[in-house]
Image 1 (cartoon, protein in one colour):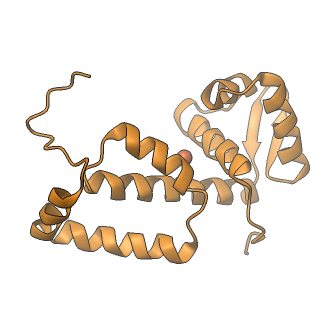
Image 2: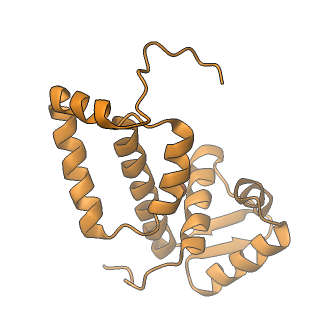
Length: 153
Ligand code: FE2
């Protein structure tokens, strides 16, 4: 069965992404944890969570936390996939972690399925062709040789 194709807003995607990650890492998602991760007040998170509940994307159970519905989980998996793919791609290009995180958090909401598909294909090809990848990385301004760097900042 297909989930509705109505595109989710960036905010909705950010919530679902964090909720899924909390569930995967801690086993549950609570309002307080979401608020902390998104740097948003608990009151705002509660409002949004109630809205997502009304839209059928999750079930809000006061003492158990949040449970994603099938539709909510599908959206969460989708944004999580885009996040991982874009992160993987930019890491491959040798960009620094801060830039990657910042850019991915913006880009992930705006890439179409066609672009996702194209980047997947490009990532696969680059991984198979180390010599080409090396040339691409040498041309990227913020590419830094990882091996020579000690982790000080
Ligand atoms: Fe993300």
